Image (cartoon, rainbow, N blue to C red; front, top):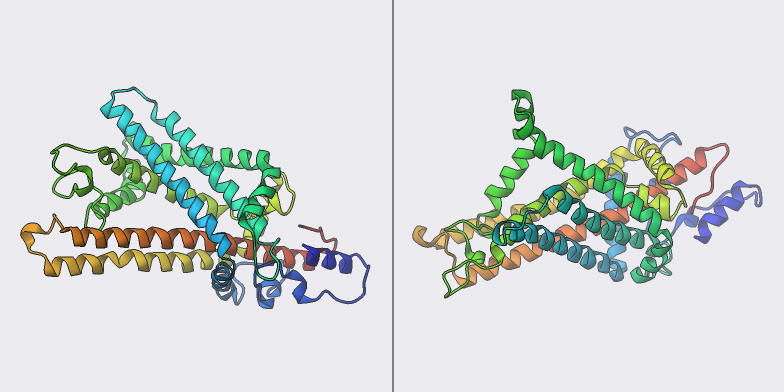
Length: 376
């Protein structure tokens, strides 16, 4: 962060020479227009905001391509979500197979808290590893080691996110059942219910085949046994994981600068939340453009399942359409793996882009303030 210190010295009168643009380099390629374009007060509707948002995403892709060690974030985040799915499936297995009476809300709360704690910690490590890079190289595990310093703030922020996520789940899941008024049911069926229906109708089709109901229960039967395997309980757990993942993604997108303000700006939780809101007012359009750009990439890969499905339907007789051969099952699994990989790589790029936007917004705030506040 020596470049930031140099800017601070310039602004406090230690040197009369204006700060150079290259002083903002912290491991991410930030073009000059990204850091300085627009008025100091920002404003999401200024010219070039979409270009800056897409540029942040492209810069994140280039950074990830240069710093392959950051892919550890991708792998570890994927393992965290796999653990979430196993935890979700365990609830259904204990509840319905072992007939253990478990409280769904309490179970979900602890699973979500553990999941978000791991994800926020990994995100803090990602932010801390990039500025420490030298000549385009970064050590992700070095960033994780530095993130331990902020474990209390990371835990508190994870707890806040868990409460917010559980509140949304309760509102969307319990309110329609407890208060089945026409207005509430309309909002449910056109919101959360539509998402749940989409997941159910899509995941049971080839190439996903994640269904515990015949005739698409390929992965829930034990060959030669005639019974149901443990994977029977993984399907509802996987659906729960997808639902919570969508909610968690919304929470991270709404507050993208809290973690960098904690680990880079040395802020408390309250200051970080207030600072994130202030920065989002300046960069909401860039953040929306960046999110939309990455979302389009993932959506394109996701919609390719229609091509796989169409190719399978073209060469497969109708009588065996729902019972693919081993070759088609292997192709479907490869597609599923590719889709999941692209989704987690996009999440990694999104984290890098969030740091790019954070530095850009802080630099504009720094330059436009009559009494600038130094930041890490």
